[in-house]
Every structure is written in C-alpha cells, then in structure tokens.
Length: 126
View (cartoon, helix red, strand yellow):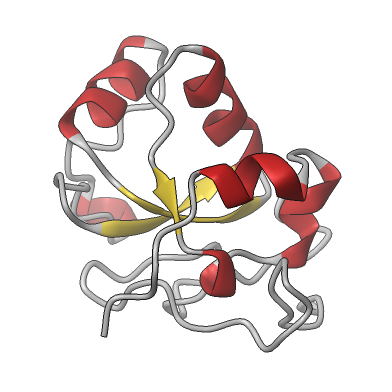
C-alpha cells in the first residue's frame, strides 16, 4: 500500500501526532494516509471529554479499548489522528477538539478549510 507524501496542512514535513497511544491509519504515530484510508485519519487532535462523549454518542466510540485491533481507547488529554469528516462533525456539534497543524496531513484540506483548522490550532507539545 503506497502512502501519500508526508506533508502537513502548512506545507512542511508531517510531524508525529502520538506514539502513546500509537495512532494513525498506519499505526506509525503520524496522521499519514493513502487511497486505502477511506476515513481520512488525517487530523491530529487533542481529545477532550466533551469531544469523546459526543463521538461515542454519534457511533464513533473512541473511548472503549479494542485489544483485538491494538486499540487502547483514547483518553482526554491524549493526541489522536481523527477522521477529517469526524472533526468537521464535532465542529458542527460545538465540540471540536484543538488541532496540531504540523501533525495534520494536507489531505485533511480536502474536507476542512485551512482557515477553520487554524482557528482551533494549538502549539506543538514537546
């Protein structure tokens, strides 16, 4: 499976999102994507309780661990590569999480305007 070029929404190199929990479509810690990633797991977010509960209520349970899929569950305060359409849904529901622009893949821009992502941007946490 060929991975898309690892560029962020600002045009620079895509920085890691999270290795604990290990995130990304490829489970490489980055919000890398490819044509096989139908959900476009491209937005690096900082999860909040309100956001996680809203996602669970809308059928996207990110809280419950699924060990058989190597999914530990996401907790408030953790970073996660989220589907771009799910971020947009959270925005429309008033619970959009903060975004790490340098860790958000440029393909997210196919779904979310850069200006909107910039309004929810946070500085990278080292």
